Length: 252
Image (cartoon, rainbow, N blue to C red; front, top):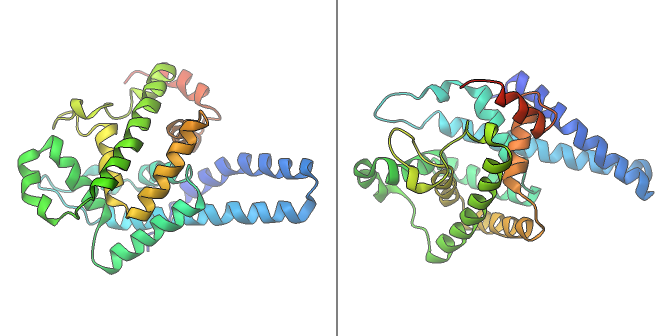
């Protein structure tokens, strides 16, 4: 099992500390007292542990993704990998995390690689000829699941547009936005990356994320914003606005 880099552990605990304090304070005002605080802290601890375990599984699978151009530099950068992946999974419920952890365990037991599946699917729009040679090894996705995937992707594209408008300096450092922009030079877009990752999940995990995404959207929330906020905290920023201002001062 790959260990989480010490610097990342410190960062995630620091990032979680503020949320812990806020939620504990909420419990104090609600009159539940010390027992409620302890329960809440235990819940947060469990979620963090799930996020660690999932990211460790993903890192291990990522080490066994091979491409014709040789080993990618990002495969030798666990610090960035853990920050990015944990930022994403921290935005979801324990129910989603438990389901996806089970996906990872099952895949490893069966000799499958969910990360390979994701990157193989991404080749459809960047390296279509090579994709034709590997698509036969990818699991079939039902029509119903594809429809749910597209619902999730559509919402995320809208959320991404919000980020590009309100946090342009942060957003321009990420992937291109839409599938229409995919090519070998630009790589896969945010839209394509998300779509292909969703295809690597089990039907149960996809359904849970589909439900949580729809509910967040109905409440006027932006899960992508939460994910990016998690990322910026990993890099030492207290707020997205602080990160946006700082990134505007840095030339790419």
